[in-house]
Length: 136
Image 1 (cartoon, one colour):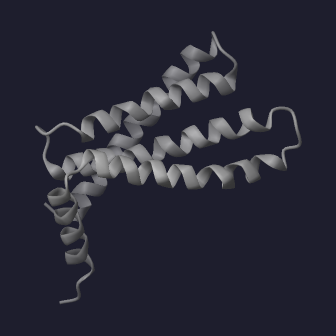
Image 2 (tube, rainbow, N blue to C red):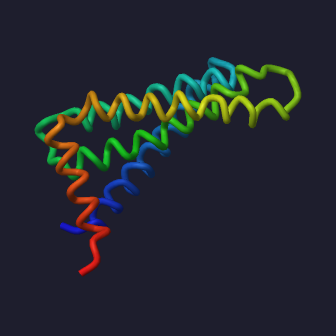
């Protein structure tokens, strides 16, 4: 299997997660405020790829693709938290809040990678990445 296969897995997973997110956002939007519904939906959706990437029965290639898809959902969480932090203040503060929330997003993503994958799996992933960039 090549890298195009991993890209397809990640793309299909992101499309399915986005569809699930839109359906849940609509359903929770009937009950909650739009930003609260978005935050609840994004946090629910984030648990799906994290859970799938932590299963040992799935091959490492699929687990890595599921884990890569969790980054999309983390960005959705940040995009829903920023307006809640700013509230009714100027929209100029939303990009500032987004910039401030990017660093915890990177930290959470790095910590989850250390939790989900073992040291041997991380070395195998890095070895595959270095093979892609090696010039013949």
